[in-house]
Length: 345
Ligand code: SAM
Image (tube, rainbow, N blue to C red; front, side, top):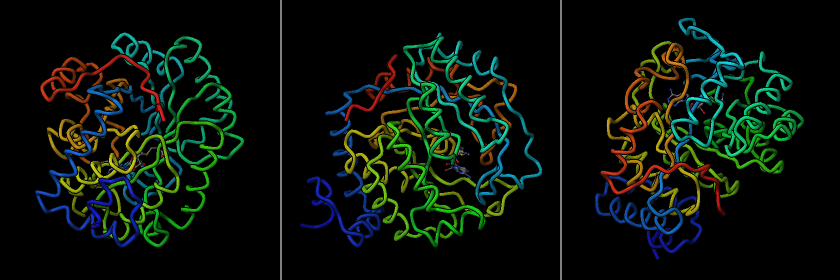
């Protein structure tokens, strides 16, 4: 049995088999075979439903210096902002009216947002919208902190592991950041009962197929409920400012592999994919994705959450353009639904 047959039949692959599998991504027939299988599995578990999440980028202050990220602490050109509790609640209100039943609070690692402040915000959202899920994406925190956030009602947590290979992780991050801690956080979040999302960028400088194989193996070990992947896109004011962007077709190929490896996983067609290709979200769906995360942040700050250059911020990815998204999904046979869209493993 070769690696493709093994993948399709649901067997676990060895590291070398993952490497071979990924290396075959330029073969159109193989790509098509995997996409068809990915769509089949998506259909079996989620039908033609597309779950939407309202993304609220509530702070772009960050204490970390990740080399790839446009809001990292050394970026002098970033125009810093943080939303007030009332502004966050206004985003939720408009999102609820537009049909969102999950709010994703994402931000840099901003020490201003202490546990007390976050608990207050999360509790209020859950009080006002008891039928909605709250997802947090605010980086590495202590076990105790995660416990308090869970106690306040947070349902899910997105924390991409970024790179599962220790050596490579160091090429993307300054010395004061550690892969061990990031992985530990993911296991803590799982232990506390969060629905957990991990993931990585495709095509960061120096990334090899071996590194990607390590990512797939780590995800197998973690068994997350959500997986976020998207192409790396350079930001001019970072160490990687002059590097090339990651490949859209490799990202799509990896999405299909992830759907096959994790048939029930919640898999977004990410904003980065939608930025790298105009039809990125639709192609992501056709590769097995089942989630889209339109932007609900206030228009006045949207362009300041610039993780990379030319990040889409007022086009079809915007929450206000939900009708456009509904239509574009209908065109390819999918249906945006009003639903919390929980993991049903
Ligand atoms: N601070 C939180 C954390 O560390 O998880 C959440 C915010 S962080 C900016 C969200 C994600 O954006 C990161 O996990 C990273 O994978 C992605 N990202 C950052 N810079 C990027 C870039 N230049 N291209 C594509 N994605 C990027």
